[in-house]
Image (cartoon, rainbow, N blue to C red; front, side, top):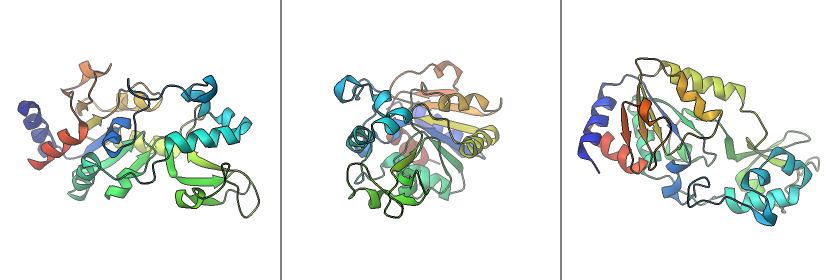
Length: 245
């Protein structure tokens, strides 16, 4: 890894008063959770349906059994553990440097690593609820249930508390993310190609004096806007840079 880039990021971390991390699927690949949008990801589901179709709001309502079959097989990794990226971000928060993690991921690994201020733009697999009576259920509660989990209280179908294709982001989470991004002086974006909107558009709201750092294996459309771009593994970059702070 280029030592100059690590030294530059270490200096930026040291000088920053308020750091926000904005992350995507690449943050969790080292934990064994695949990046479905990468060149090595899963683009299509069974029966010729695309990934986006199978995980859409309409498909969940019209074909709940097929939806849950696909969702369980490609989105649930209950044994996944936090990696170096998650652990480093939790350490940065504990040290008072990191004010928020804004994530597009739904795996809950930031919280598992110890992060407290986590804004989950697309929800979490660990939260589920009955569409009829709104009773909440944990991931552990629904895993043993039949293909289509049903509420033991009213018999209604349970759905994951994640943002499916065709659904809007939750206003409160979006506002929290915007507030964090607008007030930080160092925005580190990692493990995302920044092609999923509206989430990716949030980084446009950083203030003029906020430094932007992009850490991603591949190039993004935002590379030219950043003060520092590192095309390496996000966990390795974060842990090495933070070690020098």
